[in-house]
Length: 172
Image (cartoon, rainbow, N blue to C red; front, side, top):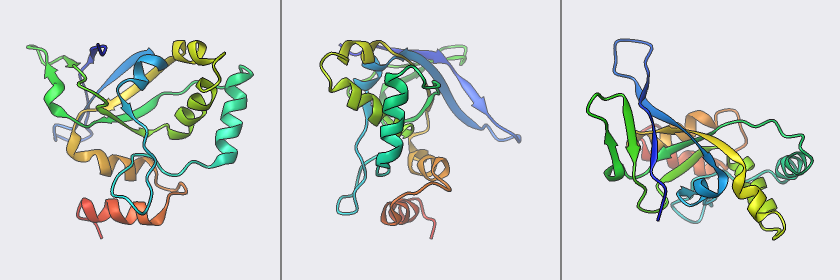
C-alpha cells in the first residue's frame, strides 16, 4: 500500500492572484520512488518527464553521495492526477493518496539518476532507500509542462523536447 502524502497547503503569490498551490513533503527515497515518474524524454516518443542526463554530472553526484560529500537539496515535482488530492476543511493542509506513480519529477533528475545507480548495487539498496528527501510538490496538474520549462531554462535540454512542450502549452 502506498504511503499517504500529507503537508501544509502553501501559496506562492506576488500579486492579488491566488498564486501557485504546493506542498512540501519530507520522506525517504524508498517511499518517494514508489510514487514518482522518472521517465527520460526521447524525441521519438511523446512522453517522459526528465531531460537526458549529463553523464559526467551524474557520475560526479554519484561519487559525492557515496563519499558523504553531497549537499542535500530538495526535489521538485508536479502532481499528475488531481483525483487523489484533497484539502482540509480549513484549507490549510493537503492530502495526496497516491494511486500509482502520481508525481512527475520536474527538478532533480540527475540526483535521482545518481541515487538509482547507487541503489542498483545490492549492498546499497537499503541505505539509499532510507535517505531523507524533501520534495516541493506543485498541485496544479495543468502546469506540469510549463513548470518543467521554467525549471530547465538555461540548462541543456533536448531541443525537440522543449519545442514539443512549448507547442503543448500554446507557446511558439
